[in-house]
Length: 166
Image (cartoon, rainbow, N blue to C red; front, top):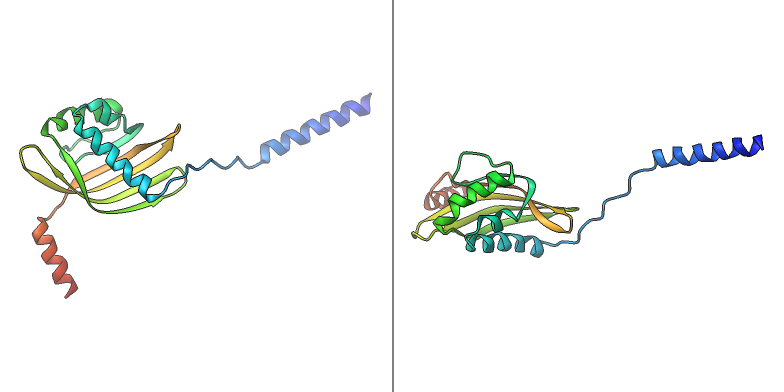
């Protein structure tokens, strides 16, 4: 009986030690390609067209960070992100990607490039952007969104690029 108790205790201890030292299971990676990640911008842009700040905010993770184009204030909560879009959406923004680079990893994707926004008053703003998406609870959400207006006028930038190449 004593031998059985010792053997059972040793077996239990060995099993516990193995469980403690076993590497955590690898995360399940969501299958995604560049086309699917590019479509996330289209989803976000379509939500802008609704003029509903709640629909736009739904694209963002609950702990997302938004560094917007036309506001100096970083937005770090759903309420702050919603507030930004509450004031931005009446301008009637619609974005068009000019150039992009997409990188896809395990449950993480980046869409980085330049885009141009057109507004209902006819004005346009060219900007650089970064979207970092995370796959959470079965959906891709924006974890980080940074957008900043181009520091140079478009024509000047093209001239500089041509000058740099010569």
